[in-house]
Image 1 (cartoon, rainbow over the protein chains, first blue to last red):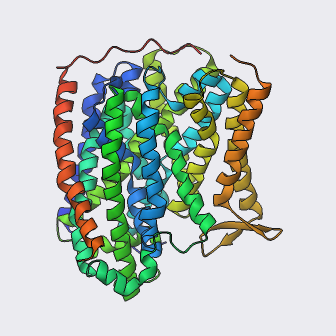
Image 2 (image 1 turned 60 degrees about the horizontal axis):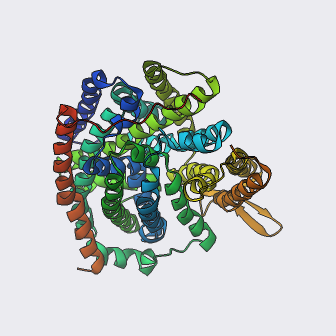
Image 3 (image 1 turned 60 degrees about the vertical axis):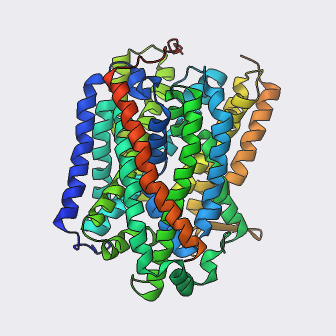
Length: 488
Length: 50
């Protein structure tokens, strides 16, 4: 267990954090009475405008996992985090904004899994919902919240994970998508403004990028990094998950019009890139501090940001930054709990139960499903040791299961063949599960890359390479299904 | 100041004043939507009974 670093948090900082938490719960309480129909509860009545979508998209998609995970990676690996891990996402978001959004207008679905179910049938919808559910579990955010609680207060990881889940579930279970969106707006402001305020202090402490270069050398400024190319490529390719990101589809379906979501993505890309840069810069500053002894040289990468904040930020700014960390976490946790619960109830239970459910029943079941999602999240969060490996697992599951059938349904009009969707989705999902299971049982730890590996006939297999196998298998399954299956 | 420091200040400008401008626009839209001033767009047909 890590020894708590703080008690250098001033009571003013703690009051700021406490007020923020109370305000979020109050929002859920106030909005609970407005929710009548399931469409209100899950899609905020399909009335979201561009500014609301910007706040909601940015704050939900980028959580504390991005803040803590990216800064931690940058402390070890440098600018590769912004250039190579991050920019493929910018490209994917641009394509999604310009090509995907407008194809969803006129589609009367409540989720991506629902969309695929309407196109391919129930089997594909269930596979899609399972992958979407695993991905939507905000494991990364909960892990980061737990790490924060452990470093700040010495609370055991599992307690921090449970507390973090509980607060977010409370207000979104009560107020649904409206509570989610409203709190996202506040959280968006807090997480961005607090980072903007903190960044100059942190960079000044290490003498700017000149100081970073003097300490860490040119290696930290290499855009492609120094890890094996295939390993780097595997992480860059997780950007394909953007095309099957359940949150994006939920927001796209909740938008008032196609132009609103397109414009929100384009503005969001600017904010995301700025946020990425800020977290990378803070991480590199943390790396420089570790090299000079200002921070312990063996600081775990997921704790770099949390340990340097109280050392260099003045009173009030430190509390606001902690509030920003919480905001970043909760904006993600609440949105993804809503999506995950919707997957369980609307996309798995409802089609398998084969009966129509009243809106108030759907709402009640979805609220209950949030508790199930929270429990599953805590279990998964305690299994993975680092945020980065949890991200690789969930993104790989999602992309391998959904990428091929989703892109085919959006861009290949014509025959709808249920077998194609089923083979593509279940094939991709099965391969990922198999690779991770085999490496878990028969693989060995790779201490340099912090993953698991297996050497077979001179070829090194890492867990992260599952994507390279699963997506082609999914594509083959799709083609086979098109050849052998019958149209709906 | 290096080019990376200049980029850092650009990021600060986007995440600070830029974000606050967006939040003002949001506050305006939320007041209209939650206050019921603008009617919602026509809803879609009911979801399938699958």
